[in-house]
Image 1 (tube, rainbow, N blue to C red):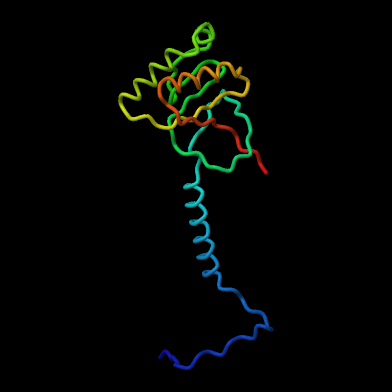
Image 2 (tube, helix red, strand yellow):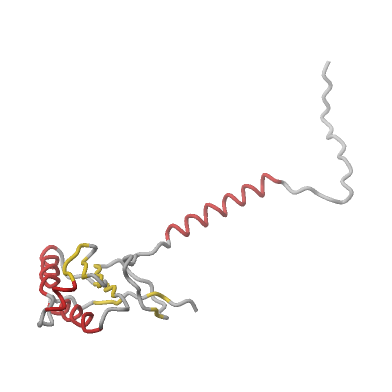
Length: 154
């Protein structure tokens, strides 16, 4: 015969020490972990620099928005990741307008309305090349231009 009682069992003496509820602590840690993972995955980088770019530093506080991207690397000029012009041919031109870049921008303007452009330029590139890229964008009626830089740690 099994004896059961409706009265609670007497508790063992704990000498004034209590044991924490391990289940509650594990649940709380899981909730914190899920929250942190969700917040970090939302705050990813909008723009990733090319491997052959060395960006200048800045102390600006504003966050980049997703935009059309022009990359001016040491080997050439890319528009949204696609090669538009190489540097030997680009450097030999006398005009301020870079014709292949202008044509690509005009093709995009036909498909969609003009949008902001983010320009990524290697810090080792001569400013004359950057000036030609800016002038070409302006001639293609892209007026909202931003230069991508690395934010300095404060």
